Image 1 (cartoon, rainbow, N blue to C red):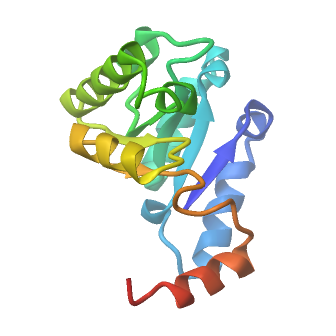
Image 2 (tube, helix red, strand yellow):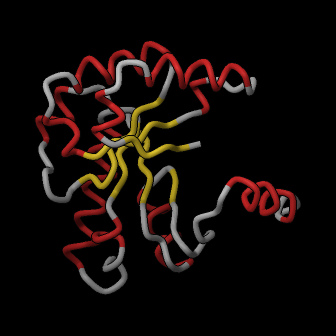
Image 3 (cartoon, rainbow, N blue to C red):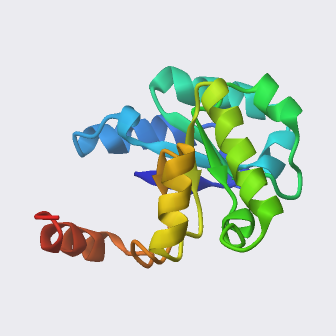
Length: 164
């Protein structure tokens, strides 16, 4: 499971203990959870300590929308991310724009060299999914696989697609 975490939530010191407790109540392990943070959330001086605390609890940390806006290789060097999320703005053009294809390939290679998984956002077709898988992209998300679902719809989706 992945959860988008904004900088306001990162600022609440009670969030991580509360979240760990809620997972325990549901017999879930923090290792089953990815906490996705945006690069702009890393500007705060306390973000490094927050990431370290999350990882000590066993959460996986994903850098969301990598390569846009506040992109900095210094963040990758400074923080020990488990996952890079390749922004959909690059994925969108990979079937007909060589530069987008090369950027995607480069980000996947960088992540692999640093021991990170890669999630490609915005996969809208089998062709794009196959291209990214061929590059070594670990995971993908987008309307090709499913529209965003609430919890109840997700359970129904899983039940209906177990045989696949």
